[in-house]
Length: 362
Image 1 (cartoon, helix red, strand yellow):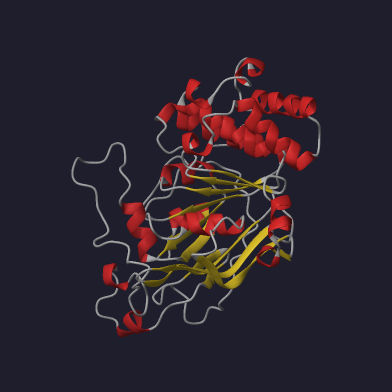
Image 2: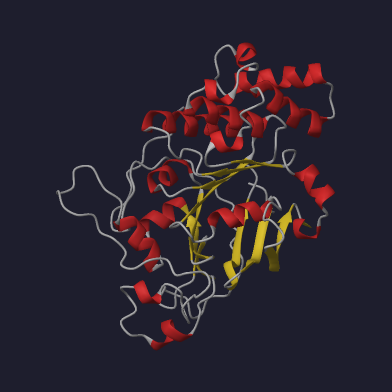
């Protein structure tokens, strides 16, 4: 594993001006992604996951959006200081993104081939014929049968799973170093979800690229991630290797997420939930943003008045909770976890069970 991260986000803050005043949905996000690594970002809707991802590519509209602080370092270079022309050379060529809903991302009046070839021609500076060759090869790489014929079809002629494969082909046609996958299996049935995730794993192994996987599904995280960042109210509240996070979660929000996952074989009954809702980004509570919903607070004044920072509370483990073991003595820092998993996990736990391990396949 390389010593330096491919991408490092350091205390990133993004604000939006609205008719009702300014809101700050991303406020001090810190995380790092290493080459060849899959980092999963999880959390409820409204916690800032997608805005963080769009910020990496400079796709937050300005106005109303604006960068309030922090850095986004790609191999040591701060992307926030890049001009629009410089960012155009980064998008697609070095960092690519798969969006949540392919039907809204693909243009319905252009063929699949035209849309992929346009991206290839823009970043690889090749002619039309060569761009179509690369587009056809990209469709073949993602498992689309008869890719030459598919080049001349329109998005509405394909199923949801096929359109998602097209989006992956488009994103990977220029062989980026980092792929941002924002809920890549949303609205797909379970079988197609598994195929898409297996496809991403295979392409990652072949090309050695890093993946930033944004998802709500902790089962997907357990099967695919090396490192996990848990976001709440615009911040990373816990970051650890996937094994440590599921076995020994150090933040009450993480424990709540794990307890809310249904399990095969468990007694029938209502799923556990986290009381309350994610706070409005225009009116975050004082102190720890999670304290109004936290079962561990018990009237603690520190939680209600002092906003915890992200600190390293163990080897390859960061938490932003006053009550995490070792928090008081721990240093504040940006998580850097150069970890690649070697053994798959069989199921999601609530932090009280140890995931069963399989022997790696030969």
